[in-house]
Length: 227
Image (cartoon, rainbow, N blue to C red; front, side, top):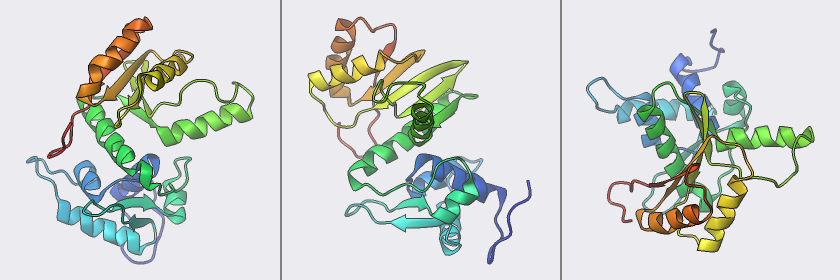
């Protein structure tokens, strides 16, 4: 593939892969970029190299950096120019502070799953949303029907919906989410929640006779984070 000409530092194939990855996820942290693209064979991570490359991409107006919360990392997003170059069918993500923690946790979850299941592929929530808009425009489904998952993992030909809940929801809300999923046609649903929520959600799934479809899984906390 011939890389586009730019002023300043030349773009590499890794730069383009990085832009596509950021665009598909929406928002990511510099450390997440480092782990994904600057991991070394010895198991280390080239954070310095990652930070320098991100800075160059920002200087080229392909990425932008935004502050989020006090004592928490900034997030990286593609610009309009970066999204055009990435060409993955989605535009730049909006920065919605209320959704940042969920979005970043989802990036970690997806990366862990792809690493644990070699050969699998992922459709991100952003890509699924664009796909659903196209279906609605074509009148191939009723608006508002079914649950849009946080991602879809394709593993050995099976499409697995991913649901990630960081907050503790009321049982009625969990049951409503489950029932909207049951109107869809996924091969399986992997539902990640805080460990303390697992027993309650499993009981809801059992009560709705969805045990064969829904796998309730404890979300692994980040280092230093309570459950």
